[in-house]
Amino acid sequence: MSRLRGLLGGLGGTGGSAWTGSAEDLLYDGESVRERVDLSDGDRVVVTTHRLLAFTPGDDGKNYREVDLPNVADVRAGHAGEANLLRLGARLGVYGAVLLAVGVFVDFGSFVPTDAFAGAGAGRLGMGGLLSILRRALSLLARTDEFARMIGALLVLFAVSVLAVYLLTRDRVLEVAVVGDGDPIRVPADGDTIDGAVADLEAVLFGGGDAGADDRGPPPGDDPLAGDSAAGDRRE
Image 1 (cartoon, rainbow, N blue to C red):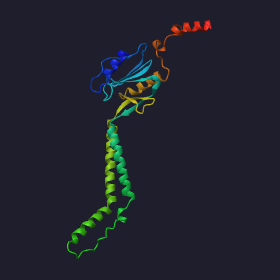
Image 2 (cartoon, helix red, strand yellow):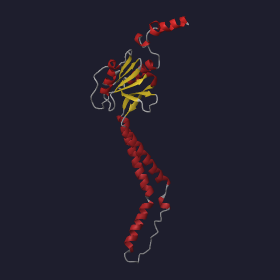
Image 3 (cartoon, rainbow, N blue to C red):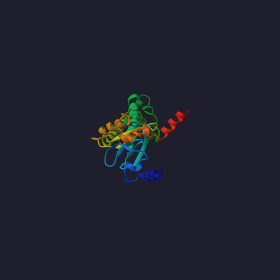
Image 4 (cartoon, rainbow, N blue to C red):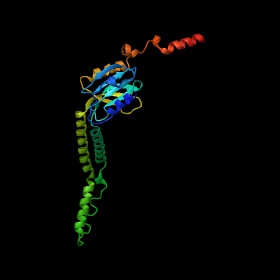
């Protein structure tokens, strides 16, 4: 166990130091490999008799993650991209939609008194310039719905552009859903290999695939407790 913790400690870095060991170096005593799936350059998934091991040396996060087999809920193909672009596009889309709704359904010209100062104070010294500024301000306020439609349309257009960039730049990944975790484990994968990888992993994890003689465990006759239990039963 101490050897395993030491190896995992070297995998915890988030820098560009890729681990050069093998999955066999991380196995517990009595644990063996059932399936090994290579997804992309250095990224792979290994299923053992006890766990699922995900290696992602090219990812920005951890180089290695492990899940006990009972906690693996699903394996599927998915996509991963810049989450900041997705959030930015969604936020701009909401702002643009709100402004468009205000511009379409609210008529500011109907309740802004644009003629409130018409003819008022024209003969008073120094009042003409001030009243002209107020009338212009009211005129601009009455056109707020036009400005809202224009700005809203621009924001929606920009949001669509940002989302398009997100869709074009996202990558194919293999997603491992874990019971109790909101975010699945994502392993980068090549588009032409991910479907076969998902099928292989599903067969091993959920389809009762052939695990090999080493994975079936010792036969009942090799159980060291079986003899004692049988003897105890005979004594009773």
